[in-house]
Length: 106
Image (cartoon, rainbow, N blue to C red; front, side, top):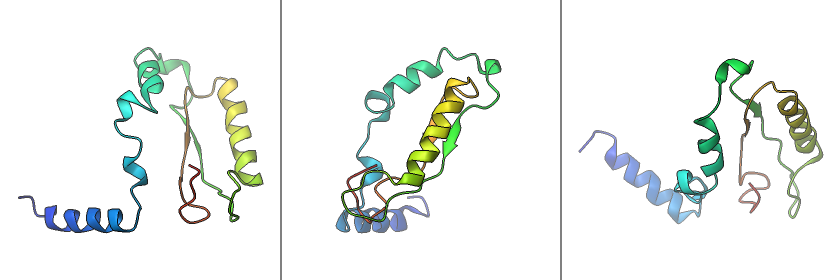
């Protein structure tokens, strides 16, 4: 047993108990949500891009029933513009199931 396994088991049990299993909902990544991105990666000439990806920091809404805040939309639109300009082959959004707490939106 590795030194961290007991704590890992406690943490996983706590996440399940609290319904915070969001990170595992999209597994297996290679067959689900990320399949197209992984396939695209195999054929990318990385020298064609200034950056490997564009990161969109989370700015979630604070209201129930709102999928994306105004500031979140602005950030996403800016990333899409840069993507279409050919700056990077991918957009990575951070955050998920965060605002408001335990939102169904990711």
